[in-house]
Image (cartoon, rainbow, N blue to C red; front, side):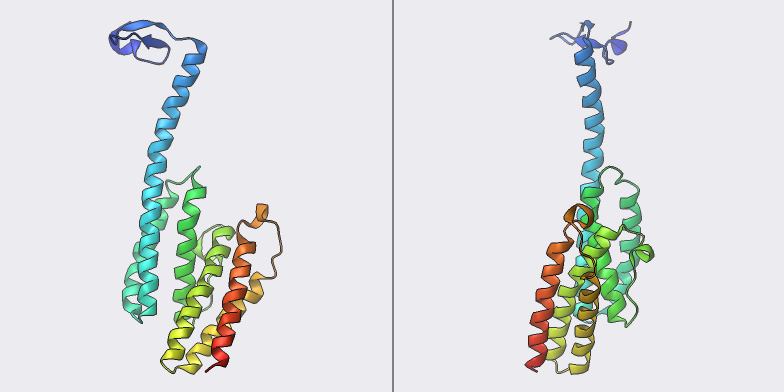
Length: 208
């Protein structure tokens, strides 16, 4: 066998890099696993990078909504869609990582729809699993409260009432789901968070 063949799994190189004989079955198993894990590590790094970038762009789009720059937000949405498709193409076996990014995507898509007075898109519309959709929907409530506060500060009472109504609508619907974390992930914690946001927003509305 040539030198290249000796480096294949099944042959153990000696300290000088020469063929040292056939590897044991245990050594071969570990060598195969090592090859698999190296490939998975490369894929994981790529998913993490794509995940971080998608979250960053979503945060930028949300900021655009709050400052009233809907045009800038609209310009970012196609980029978000492209990055979602790219992430979906590489995240097999790493969905536990990419779910955070999908959650952020849901949040910006829900907020964009509500700021434009449109219906909330569901998880099928957004082509995501229902778990990140529920989490993103819950997180949108916090951003709606922020929009409500800005509206009150600017004396836009009617706009604040609209955001408060949508906060309540999301809360009422999320509270229908009462299941264990093994089925719905972090939803119970999110429900508690949404309840607090709605209660604080109600107090803020009453003070104006």
